[in-house]
Structure formats: C-alpha cells, structure tokens
Image 1 (cartoon, rainbow, N blue to C red):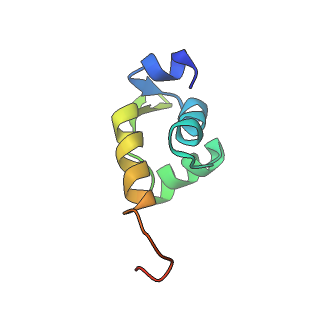
Image 2: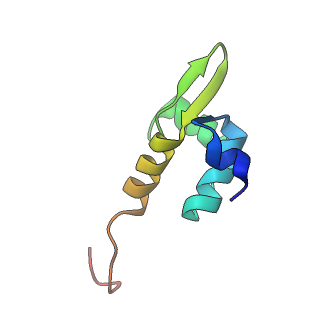
Image 3: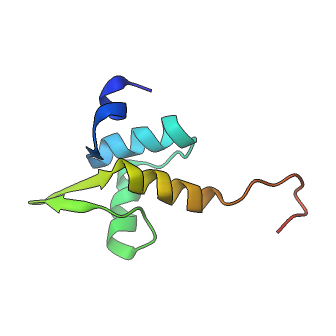
Length: 77
C-alpha cells in the first residue's frame, strides 16, 4: 500500500476508494462512495467544508462489516 495512504488519519473520497481496494480487496469507485454518502450504507465520514473525509479506522470498520465472517463453505449463511 502506498505510504501516503497508510500514514494519513483521514482520506479524501478518491483515496478512500484506493485504500479499500488495496487494504481490503473491495473495489468501489469514488462515485459509489458518493452515492452511499447520500443514500446511506457507506462508511462514516466527516466534512471539512464541502470535502468529505473518511477516517481510516471507519473504512476498516465498514469493510469488516461488509465482508462479514469467514466461511468454510458456500452453504454457510
């Protein structure tokens, strides 16, 4: 993962998109993060003026919830 993403406490939307893919394997376009910010269901964020900022800990928390528990079989719920 690029050092700039690793060392920042909050990421802009395009950086959050990159972080989710590199850290968690979740491919989500910045536009999809914007849609989730409007309609709900996305990671928590803060705003600095008009700029959404995603705390890395919230991205990690959201990714863990989205990925769910580990499974050993496709028949597990």
